[in-house]
Image (cartoon, rainbow, N blue to C red; front, side, top):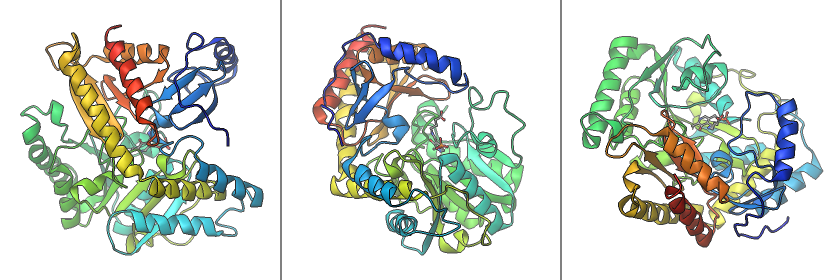
Length: 446
Ligand code: PLZ
C-alpha cells in the first residue's frame, strides 16, 4: 500500500493537462448520461487526499459519495481484499458458498439496531438492496403498496427511480415507473411552513393521514425512509417524525425500512443514524461505507421477515462477492479500531463551529440559510440573501471555487442549493481545517 502525503497541493490548473486529455478520450467513448462532478482523473487516493494524474493533491470532502469512510486505500481493506483475490475471486454464493459472506452477515446482525434475531442477504449496489427490501416486505405482508417521502432518494433502477422523489436528472424521460409507490410529506424543518418546531408532529400527522386516506394502511407493505435524507439535501427529519412513522408502521403491520445506504456505518457518528432516536427498523438497507470502496450492499432485518422469501427467491450472480466481503470485514475492523464514530462526532464539532462562524462573520454569510447534518454528513443550504429562496447558483459557484483550490466538495438537494461535506472519517484535523479555510475563501470569490 502506498502512503499518500496528507497535504493539499495544486501544481496545475484544475483539471490539469493530463486530465484534460483523458477527459477528451472519455467524452469520445463514455456515454454522456454518466456525468462527473469534477473531471480530474485519479491516480491514487487515501486518507483525506485524492491525487490526480497531474500530481495535484485534492482534499477529499466527498468520499466518493459517502463510501470511503475508512479512506480509499485503508490498510485492513487492502490487506484482506488482496488476500481474498489471491485465494479466489468468485464462486457465486448461490453455487458454492464461502465464509466471508457469512461473517459479514454476522457483523451486520451485531451492529444493526435491535437485539432480536436477524438475518441478511447481500447484493452489489444500494439500489439493488432497496429493490430486495421491497421484494421481502411484499412477500412477507402479502401487500403491494410502498410508501416513500418527499426529497427521498433510493436509486436509479426502475423500481428505485419510482421511489426517488426528484425528477431531473434521475427520472426525466426514463419512465414509465413501477406502480404502487406513494409519496408523503417529510419533516423538513428549515422549510416547514409553520416552523421547524412544529415540523415533526405536523408532517407525521399529514403523512399518516395521507396513508390512511389515499392508500389504506392495510394495503401498505413497506414504508421506506432515509433517517437522514442524503441526495435530497441532508435533511434530518425534525424530532419526533421518525418515531411517529415507525410506531404507525408497527401498529399497522407495515414493514419499516430504514435506508441507511448513505447515513450508515459511522457516517453520522453512530453505526446507524436511526439510533439517535432509538428507532429499531424491521429492515435496514446498507451499502456505500460498508466495504471501504468495494461494491457491496445488504438487507438486514428481523429473521422472520427476511425468511419470508422462498429459497432461490433472492440473489444475483455477484451478490456478496468474496473480495467485497473481505473488504467489508476490513472496513468494519477499521471502524472499530479507530473509533470512527468518535471521529465523525469530532468532524461535526469542527465543521459546524467553523460554518457557524462563516455564517455570522462573512459579508455574504447570510446566504447560508441552514447548517445541518450529523457527524461527517454536514451541509449548508444556500439561499438568496434575506430570503429562503433556494440559490443553486451559489452552491455551484462555491463548489467551483473550492475545486479550483484543490478541495473536492459535492452539491445536492431537491433545489440543487445544498453544499454537502462527506469527508473520509480518517481525515486529519489539520487537513479538515485547511479545507474549511478554502471554503471560507470561496465565499469571497462568488
Ligand atoms: N439509497 C440513501 O444515497 C446512493 C447516488 C449518486 P447505489 N446515493 C448516491 C448518483 O447520482 O447515482 C443511494 C443513497 C440512498 C440508495 C442509493 C443507491 O445506491 O449504490 O448508487 O445504487
